[in-house]
Length: 443
Ligand SMILES: [Fe+2]
Image 1 (cartoon, rainbow, N blue to C red):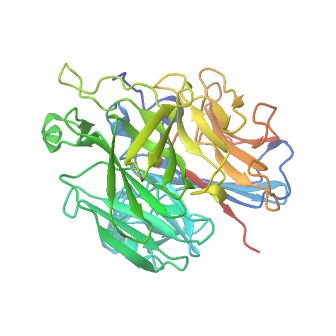
Image 2: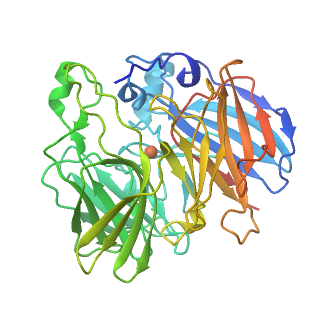
């Protein structure tokens, strides 16, 4: 695997927590953009990464960044490490035992009146949009023991579908939490061995879990790997389809692959499910040299069509742009949808550019980012009064190499190729990270 220099450029950690007010803006911030953009990611407490591959990046300490918008102004920016036992062992040892033992560095969820920083399988950490940390969840007690960082919320019912994949038994649980935070379904799913699952999909009636060909190999720990994950040629790739509120889990074999992130899924009719995802033909294959990994190929947009009557899956590549970190208008989660946005990967060591797909019309737009700069996941914020799916804004953090700072770029969701509507200029970088959420101001 090509070595990554995680300690310079876009991924380099910041070493302190700051608060800024009234940030400079070029262009005009939309008056209706009222709320906070929160972004999560790994930022080692010791100030530098150890190791030089993506599995050295993923497990580091959670740091969150919050940019607040109010009536046409960007009122503040702040960054905070998540207040966990890991943080306290460095900064406040006396209170470490009172904090959660988790590392919620992957995603941010707003559900049932609670904001949660989400970990890869670990306990979620309750927080505010201002990055004050509140400890264990108080409203999602069924998920307090650990959950995926990519649960899915049904925009019509408010239900939250989630799973917990674990390397200890039980290896997989699936559940549904209602719109108030009460767990209504909690099922153990039978697997022959633990599986590395990162994301899931929902339709209006089914949930879809991914049991693919990247999974655990604990013997790797003794050989110096920081995370015991690798590609297994002898492991099938399967899509699991379960009725939302429980019932028979049906597994459908697919061509061996690895999927980190799904785009969306929906019921095309009573017996047909469409699942779109960023698919890799393989990933994390151990290097033949015995150290590190082979270079992973790029991930592309693929469509799986699952025929529940015939028990078949058709697989089709939809485009040839390397992409990751796909997002949609979340009002369409689990429903037929037309538009998706994703970060572009011109090479497997760069996240540079944004692509917008029109899955009905076929048109593709690009927001281009200059060589040397890098960008984050594009987050779609719907216009509060919009009826069209793509009527809204796309928020993208762009790292500028020349100044070692980050801009937050606001694009028109209908036309991302045109000049940004506004650019917020931060005086320093927001390091490359994983996922974020738009938390609209209530009231
Ligand atoms: Fe993710």
